[in-house]
Amino acid sequence: MSRKTARPSAEPKPKSIQTKEALKRLADLASKPVAPDRIRREVEGMVKIWLDGAGDERRIELRDKLEEMGGELGEGVEAATEALGDLDNEDLAGKRHATAALHALRAAKDALVQARTSL
Image (cartoon, rainbow, N blue to C red; front, side, top):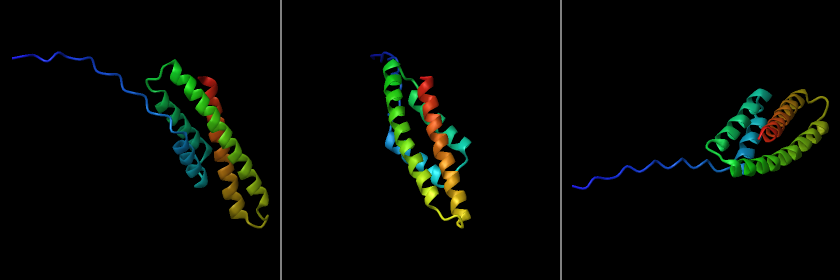
């Protein structure tokens, strides 16, 4: 009988950085809208998953992706600010919703900038 030799287990491959899906998730959360702390935790969780088992090359890639995502969220913040300004003053519920969504988007953008800076 032959004995199988034990192979060292392969290191798990880091989860790929799916920026489009991440941005969609953040936009969905902001449109609900959720509290800024909640969306900040979501960003931190995404970054943690992407960094799991990452080497230096992965950190560089992630830094670039976070910069791109921050730019796209910045555009979203500008659009949300414009949309808020376009609402009628009498539409209090709409203004409350738009303001909360704007705060959530700003929190997501700030969390991305902070994550990028910490890499």
